[in-house]
Image (tube, rainbow, N blue to C red):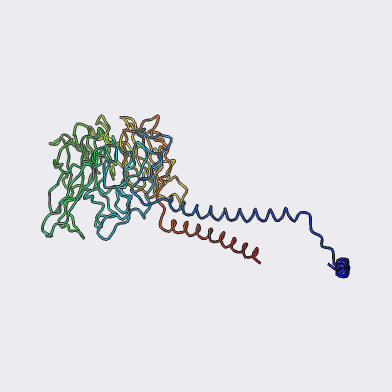
Length: 460
């Protein structure tokens, strides 16, 4: 370099402005680089979480929602809360089959604690050992038919929880003049075996009510004799009733005199029928008939294990239940709910724990959201032969559960009538599933867009 060029460069340097570089420039650059890496890792994690989350979302598979409550898995018990089934799981296809794959056709589900029929006609049994809710596709169940949907149809769990009795019909005959095949079926919940008892009379018999004896051996049914019955319509002319012996495949007709009544049976096979005027007992032949007063029997009746006292359900407007001495006809109304339901309540006996303790389903006449009174519940009470009775609330019942509820009372004791079970983990609806996936995708796209914007700024 010549001396002249060197002098010129020195003059330029002297006149050039001084650039001040902040001392933390290098640290800030490192922090910016770290943030970029964190965002990339977050985006990758979000994508992986979305993919994994979708894979783990609840699916509509045949597994049942299990509730492992304080009762402990494997300990038979009645739950302290009975939940309804979401309507989306009780829908039927055009051919009458159930659309949800939660509905089970394998009927060997084990001992049951509670059973009921949804408003859509789908039978439900809550497992005694694990609290699982089983939605059952019972062969020929009357409630499956569109004709009987919303009506009272016979289905009841035995007191020991091992058998489920229900009314059945079908298939629909080719000719309207041919009687509809119908009757009673008894499902063994341990083996899945079904015992069929065919009934005859008129154009078929629709079984509306079923009642077990306290020892889960005898069974009585009530129904109506059809004069016309097709897959779309039916008409009826008279009442009918019958008794089914332990393990029998036939039914013996119980005289009804075409009068509405509630019917119960004891462990000796003695049938008690209660009307508004009389209580009669029958064992293949009439045994006794006593006049009763002040009884408006509805829904069901339950006989003590000893057979001496029958308790009948009462209609709205009353505050308790009525006990009837089947030997004398003496009646006592137990107004144990007067303080709890001043407007009255519907009372349905569910069975006896022993000769002193009765289990009943209570439904207030006034809806809870209108007056603030407690919702439907299961109570244990002491309907002795006096008007003084005590009670204890042992379970709550969802408003979506119909009055068809039956309970395995043999699993209940005064010390432990029920146990807590968590709410069933029902599968998500399609709408909720779609919303969850949509929000997850939106979140990932937002992260990726932010990273793209950051990279663009760095490139500039």
